[in-house]
Image (cartoon, rainbow, N blue to C red; front, side):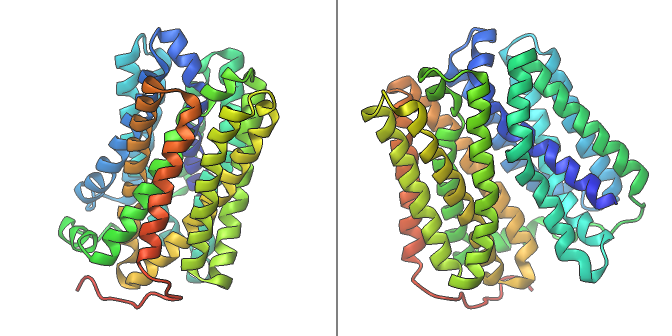
Length: 389
């Protein structure tokens, strides 16, 4: 039962991480700032997560995992409550960074705890249940949060997320035992993994993939509002994206087993780059039909972009199975670094050109990720290479 509360914590974090894409125009209007400036709320969150997560994991590696989870979730909840009360842009930006500190500490700890509390034969399912919290958030939490924000104001969405976090925290405090295993990876061990050539290439691919996706996704609602989408239609578009992402995540795992990680990752990147280019093509050349046609690229981006991710994870694990947990932790930081750069780059594109150009830039980044991926060679399997020890 304790794994369920870990999954609920992941659901709250996933909802908060992605729902802001649908709320940016409303936040910008309410705070009297540009949408590009509002987009830096995503950049600040992602950058804080990317930098803070590994540092906090090492700093708190000698503290009981139950205590770390309680501290992480409490920080995340506090950040959301501060966002509810934020009177201006600076305070909202600071609250987002506080949320990221909590989220960046909570997620890797939750995965480690799920393994610790599950029996050996159920550990894989325990990890899958926790990660499914993030996936379900894209399908249910994000559209619901956007709808709540449209009906009751964007502050209500942060209040909703704080409530979900509080429920998860209560469940964990009541259900998790004390004395859970502590983290063993030191900063030196993490750096040793990060410096390995194959890992560095994998991290570069992850950054470019995440950068391309969030160049557009950060400002998801901006072109849709320009097409006349109201709040309910934007929630529907977010539901389409989330459902596609959930399908893509499962499909990517199946295809990685059948076709191999190299082919599956390549297909995912090709589909995602195509979706981003199509997004701009539809907005540029089919303005009359874009209200309906735009859902096609949105669905394709969700299913192909998230089909890439499990294949990427599998390939990283194969580099050195003994160091896989450390490598995956660093990969998560690389992903959020890409999110941060994408949010900043998307804001620059909006300021210099317009929302219909976001897809060109995002697609170019994913294309670069594809080229780097292909440059590694069309190998069906990566040779295990010892990194640490």
